[in-house]
Length: 314
Length: 293
Image (cartoon, rainbow over all chains, first blue to last red; front, side, top):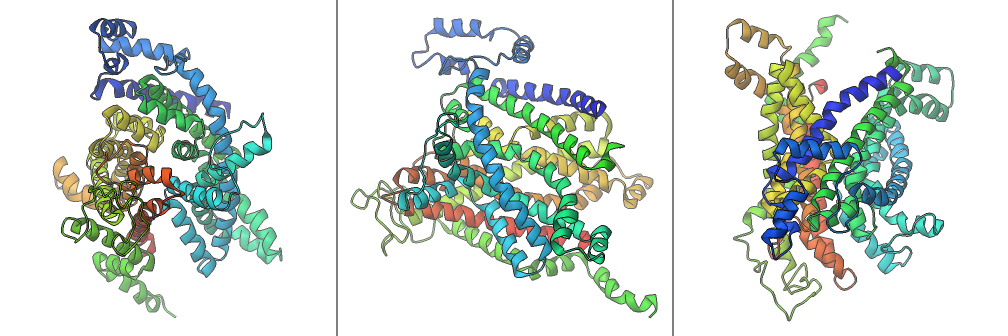
């Protein structure tokens, strides 16, 4: 396993370097001069010259890139234009909020998606399967920001059951924090639940046709035992891998969910940075999500090998 | 029973022309049919927007601010008295245009790179594949938001941003499909008779990798429509006063208690058109899947 992980990390290095070139080039190649945005409305030539010097913008582009990437490897992703805080510190502050939201969303998605997928596969071709598929496809088609708005209207404005917005850290008030995050997590979890349902159904359909399930049934085992102990256990291998890969969807979904429910997390940081033309923060976020996604991919591969002994020898 | 007695059923299926088999499977699929009808409805409405007898989508009426649906305004009015129905219909143009153009950008850029990687293999494949992996590592919406932010807010830039963000998906599919097609006997035969690279790609590879790309394009239009709505919702897409479903929802969220219809119709339209493309994409996948023959 260690050799496998080492190999995967080595393969990841060129990809990370490419992401860094892309993130760096994004600012250089696209129209718009960030210094003009930094210099404010007066655009004083002296200020512009100072900023160009400060951010090494007069250096050749390769020098600029190597200076930026070597700082990035040391954890220095630059300074936020708006808050004057180091970008990495800013991301570190916002990330726990999004991790709480994403974890709750994932739990909701797993509780809905897996049982629905199992049931749909078990009842293949019946109205249960048909209904589960329609609900899953609707879950994939519904824009989560609209679902959020509609739920605020129904659950908060009309019924007054849950708060419409805001955030309370877990450490301050555990139950209030869970209560505030419940609706956003449900909104974020819907699309994931639909994705998981479809993957679970497909994995279960394959497993339910296998010989060992037929053998288990022939031995007189109850349907519940066959489904849970034999079928689902084997179907879980691809499901766990897919769940790990849903990380990207969770992060992207969090951008809009946090915006609607005014949650001060990673997603809101992205939007605020975009509107404040805080390029260092935007670059830092894209780089961090890219690198994190690569590590999640490696984790998915490693989990697959742990869960599927046949993969270990390959 | 002899083996030949069992054969005719399968032979009939194989003997039918692929096009008619595909058409039959697609039209017999109820979800795909329903999806096609939904998509067709929105496309027709969007195309007919200029000639439909509806109000000016940007004309304000301060005497009819936030009016609930009535016969004069079947979908009500917005916060400055603009007709919601008219804005919905014109908004359909922005959404569909964004969906189709961004996917066209993704296909036109992605497929050539994918075919090149799958056809040439070696170093070219390695470089293109690493580049694709790097782009795929950044979540689609975050990449689109970052690109749109750097290019500046406008519908055109949003389409480019979504197109570029979806491009790696098509590179990967085209590469994989090209590699699969390259192992076929007819490619070997074409090589044996000395067909050039250009003709090989144009005559043998592209027609054979087209079906999975069409399926993916249909499904990606659904994703692109949601992405456009999301970016417009964030204020990065269609700029006011031009209508777009996403920007209409952005305004509507501030008037949820006073004018809930402002949020209901644009969101429901996004949902229905995306559902239509997803149903159609699923139907196409089932109809074009050779394993189903």
